[in-house]
Amino acid sequence: MNHYETVFILNPVLSETQIKETVKKFEDFLTSKGAEFVSKEDWGLKKLAYAIQNKKSGFYHLFEFKVAGEAIEPFELEFRRDERIMRYLTVKLDKHAIAWAEKRRKKLNEKA
Image (tube, rainbow, N blue to C red):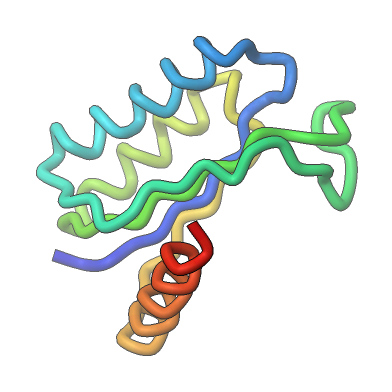
């Protein structure tokens, strides 16, 4: 099982319910592929560096998870099919990135 991190941006015109449904859809998809979640974060509404689909902001979400490599291609296909997703990026983490992510999570927990 490889360690991955996915950040995706949801359309800012969605209601709170639609956002939760969309995030749940992708969580369930990964769980059905045997993924083990390490962390899930809702970064909220953020201003974009440049307009995407004529939108200047979007709702950011981050998933950190472990799953077999074969699950990533169908996962990203689901992102491309869903019109509520404006952008996404999945990155395979190496040992240094995993250590950095753990340090970042500890800082977030200390602030909370």
